Length: 195
Ligand code: S6P
Ligand code: ZN
Image 1 (cartoon, rainbow, N blue to C red):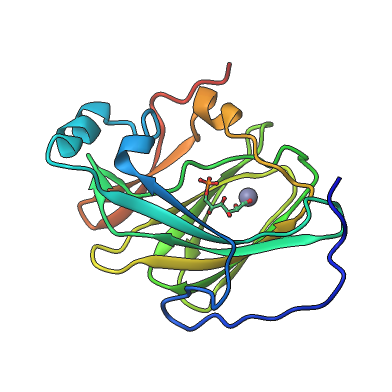
Image 2: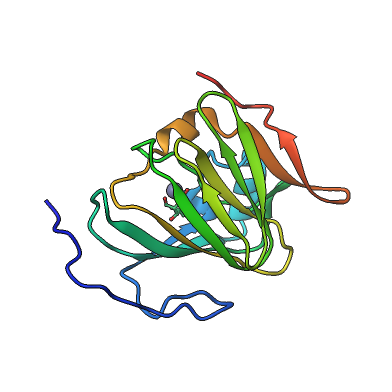
């Protein structure tokens, strides 16, 4: 059983790189680890045949996974596409559904794609300085829509939230963000699966 954090602490978050002065874990998600996330699987494997590519990285400041605590970190999504879809995170619901999350965009351009299990959807822009409140019960995935810049976001969420990736792996998200004729476009996911 983890203990509560006993002392306040601080760290710096140099803008715009966002790499925290202190972090405990550095997670890396490359194309090879993202099977089934993008719609165009042949495009992913074709890209992989030329070598793996880093899609996103997460700098986690670890803490007790307890209600009342906050877990913080920074997500960096690199620019790129698989087929028409921009690079993005796997996306998840929190295992404890009644837990929210705050994102603060430090750099880049992107979108947060969100939905509830009941069928509501929301897609919010992410630009430097924008704060986004992901309400309890909303699944969330961030997407980097810039062609040249990383999307960098600070996040904080309850220590007891946990991550449910399975629901997203089974259903996908109802909305996709693709590279359209006049810039990023939000379209319905033709393969979204309610089961
Ligand atoms: C955790 C929070 C972020 C994401 C990160 C990567 O609740 O939302 O730390 O974990 O942006 O996304 P994902 O979907 O791969 O966990
Ligand atoms: Zn989350």
